Every structure is written in structure tokens, then in C-alpha cells.
Image 1: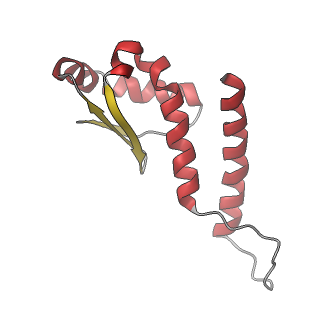
Image 2 (image 1 turned 60 degrees about the vertical axis):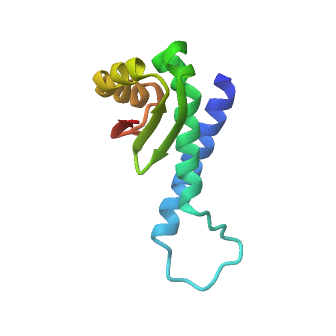
Length: 115
């Protein structure tokens, strides 16, 4: 699984450089060899990376009670079944956000909303 995550991370960094070059296109003629990638692809890759590390970061009990995990605009939305676990996650959300970013070596999440 670690190997898959490394491949995703290298693909994500390569796509990031492509995304930067797409933001500042050179005013030359049309080049049919340039691949345009929708920015939502990068958002989905970030979300997938967070979902893969979620169980390691919060533990199996908290991970199993999560109904959905969605990352949108660097805000992590987590829907939880249990009220007790929801309260625990709310109380420790800054620690969880910090762990996610530290584990993935990039600022993926700025805030977490627990529903």
C-alpha cells in the first residue's frame, strides 16, 4: 500500500507542475501535444490520499464509524454515526488535521467539519 501511495504522490506532484504550467501558458501558438487536466482531478487525488491514511491517523474504531469522508477546498467533511465518537473527533480536530498534513508531507487539510 505504501508503494501505491508513493506512486500517487509522484503522479500528484507531476500533475501539480503541469497544473502550474497550465495557469501560466506561454502565448505561443496552439500546441496539440499539451494535455489539459481538469483541476478537480487534483482535488480527487488529494481526497484519495487522505482517505487512504484516515484509518492510520484516527485508529480503527473512529475510522469504522465514519460514514463518509469528503475533502473540498482543503476542508475535510466527516460524517459520523456515533455521537460519542463525533464529540471526540470535534475535540481533537486540530490534532487530526495536523497529523494528516504531517503524514502526507503537504498541507491537504486546513479545517475539519464533523457532522
